[in-house]
Image 1 (cartoon, rainbow, N blue to C red):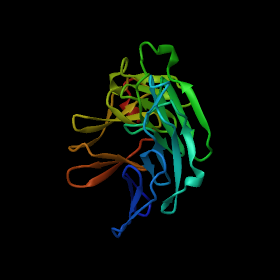
Image 2 (image 1 turned 30 degrees about the horizontal axis):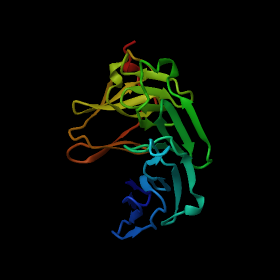
Image 3 (image 1 turned 90 degrees about the vertical axis):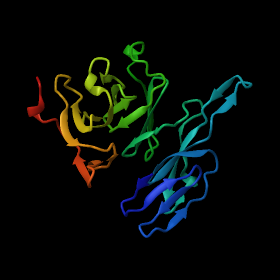
Image 4 (image 1 turned 135 degrees about the vertical axis):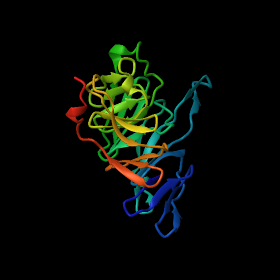
Length: 247
């Protein structure tokens, strides 16, 4: 589910997109022609058919995945574009994660990026020098901010190179991160929203807000939290305050 700038709620069932206007009117798209909708955005959906049997029934491979733009209140099938060929990955559990026009997901220890506007795709090995210690074979992208990728809950990867920036093997602050911006991670711990300076392991997490209920939503402005009495936006940090440094 997502919300458009005019307040329209955009959501899906398995095969159609639905729009709930601010006045309560609900409209539906035509159903997708092949597969099932696994992600919805204001301007399009990611669709993938189920896994399929190949090699005379000996193997099961993921079906192709595609991005279908939304035009007005309908799916623009004429401009559907494949983002992952057959055999790459069955997208699920929130993948792909999107930042701007770029979709990100992990498959077989590789970081996959796809720009839905330009159609440009890139694939890079993720932390190939430490693949034994950091087994990324079955992990998934949890967060992506254009600069960094949070893989699983334990590895932060540079989105431009695929190289590891930090991991919870040598930096316990990385545990439970759920979002990143400007190389700053965000986590919930013991009812508190905390910021973590990913680039400086010696800096302790910084308290941002008390969060008695684990309801946190991300937006361009920041993190929307429920205080127990009202909704409050905690802005993204553009840099980590020097006074919080432990080095």
